Structures are given as structure tokens and as C-alpha cells.
Length: 142
Image 1: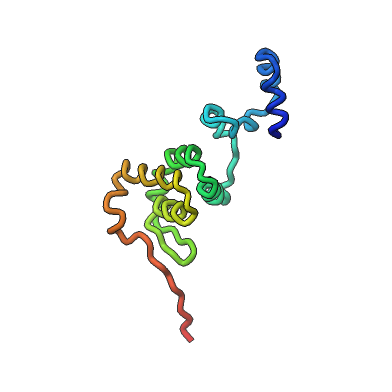
Image 2: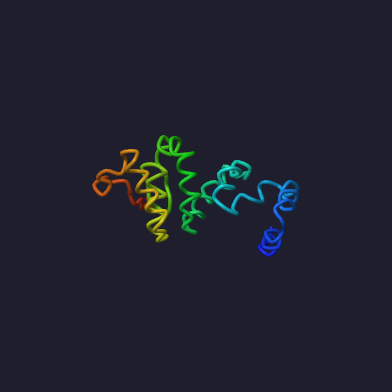
């Protein structure tokens, strides 16, 4: 839906707005506000192959609310997932990867959300001492 249409709908009386909203697909309301995101985010089909791109896009946009929801829903499988390889680097798990990605993208809000969540899990303590990033350099044996 475009923004102009939403502005015009908001000028209508509440009774008409309720009737119009019944005919608009629920997934159109996902990103309108936080309450609608909580209610309808499960309707947004994200293919498993594109989920990583979706998470990175939320970090690039510094969208901390959506990222917080994604982390809370998926952290268990991310911690158990094991090593993640990205741009010649190896990360201990996906949470460490998105932490590094948020640092590289300079996404301050997302970085705070990820850091707080890691501390809440007990994984953020002494993070600077842990060797979570290993640079991988391939050599040709010729």
C-alpha cells in the first residue's frame, strides 16, 4: 500500500476505516506500527534461503524493533547452529555473526539490542577475550 492511500484512509471516520480494513490483506499492515507487527509478522513468508538477507537488511536499516523480535524467536537455533562463515571469517555462532555485521554497518541501535541479548544469555561476558572471529586465508598448493 502506498503512503498517500493510508493518509486518505486515516482521514475517514472510524466506522469506515474498520470496514475498509476488513478487505485489506493483513500482511499489508505488518510494517505500519509495532502493534500490527506483533499481530501479523507471522504472515510474512520468508524463504529459508532469504532469511539471512532479511536479518542483514534489518541490521542495515537499523531496525531494532524487528531485529529484537527475530532474535527472540530464533536465538536457540542460532546458538546451536555452530560455525558461520562470511567473507573469509569464521564466527562461533550466528549471534556473533550478526553482532559483527552490526558493527560493520554502524547500526548503533541493533548493536545495543544484540549486545544486551548476549549479556542476558550469558554469552556477552568477556566477549572481547573470546576468539570468535578467525580470518581464513586460502592457499593454493601449486
